[in-house]
Length: 284
Length: 284
DNA sequence: CACATGCTATAAGAAACACTGATGGACCCT
DNA sequence: AGGGTCCATCAGTGTTTCTTATAGCATGTG
Image (cartoon, rainbow over the protein chains, first blue to last red):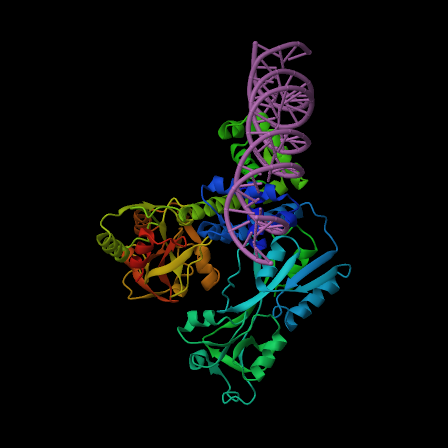
């Protein structure tokens, strides 16, 4: 189970052929063949069907483990190297689109004012990617968001030991088209919207709602991107409803169940430095 | 970051010396010295102080990653091998002491009656160990328990992709000495017990209570074992209070906040076989 | 103070390993 | 049938990673 072989295995399945993987990795086809053979003989099982190349059942299981495993190795390396890193005056903050809301943007401004020499880069990416970037050092800190019960931590992908701090919570609104019959209400209960049309988005995954409320919440439209603006347009056009943090758009406040939009700051266990400073200043 | 080197590194820190680690791993001392040197040169940092041998700061960070990493590698291996395992007629179930309560013991009996050829081994161990054993194949299935809000999943240690199913929930009681002033009550609220003497145990970690209720819940006595009987004796002798599932001992029902004792079944994504059968039959 | 003891580092050779390059067989397409 | 593509295998080679042997450095002891 050498990670080297694991990486080759993953590349082969992605490339769909030994030869293509060889080229991609800078080896000869022969080397790839031997590496896969070594892995298979180590495990005592065939991992790939040949001609065409496709993972066997065992190969599929291994694939499921291989990605996270390689990620954690990179994360461990990055984390160790961080102990030796000089306190830099650059800092990259990875954030999901809804994480850096107005409150946090102001706190970030205050933090920068307090450390004027610090060059800050903000980068928007998806939830998983935020955690990955913080883990393997491409970002010093990250902000993720999600919907949860008040004071409950978010469920984050596990990519290694990492510190998380809740930095903001706010209420949710149900985003509706302006001419929707419910648009004039002062508040809405989720229970009354079980049979409505819903958008399936990363912020408001319907599976999560079904967990809370039981069946229903059938997706009227799947949206796979991360762009809030686009989602608002879809809602306005009547494709379906979605939940948003109150500050992100107009809508009717959600009054039950008590759910909040929560933002968490992620960072590696920090050596003293600008990232630690920032972490302290972003916390409420 | 070869796992081989990582294992050596961990062994050296545990053994406290290169020579001892060499003996333990069946290498010469020279080999160990070279392996550590290779790891240090790969990362570009000293990982160990010598004479006496102790991890440097970077070494400590690496140690924190190394254990989980090696565990996941073993887990991946076990999971892949499982796909090839013949449907055996032996099954090991790892369970925490409070997980296999009377309800589940009955369901287990029914499951065994339905599969009379199946040899079942039950093994009691700690919470982390249950997850580890299921991950790396020493047990086909596991039962863990914990205190949580109704229908909320438990927080489990992440050791790899694994399926969890809630199989039982029951109310909690506050265990008290029989002559305790509150022992006659019909119900108790946790808020009224903030300043009481509490036992710190693995089932009822006071940190968890503080998360829910704020400060307080100072430990009067730390108990680090897993034996319920012993804990009951400690409570009876007035060392402090603790929470227990209602079926595990006498006490006053906890009425607020609404918390339950929850049992979850863990198993690897299963190939059809006796473990899958058992999983189905243990679920409510 | 010389010396024994217990430890790690280094040097040199031997064994194991992992690559390249050449070749062969299976399959597919024309 | 023939050419092309692909993977497996073999032999050869350079590198890696051991073992053995020895040097060097602290610490404890007669």
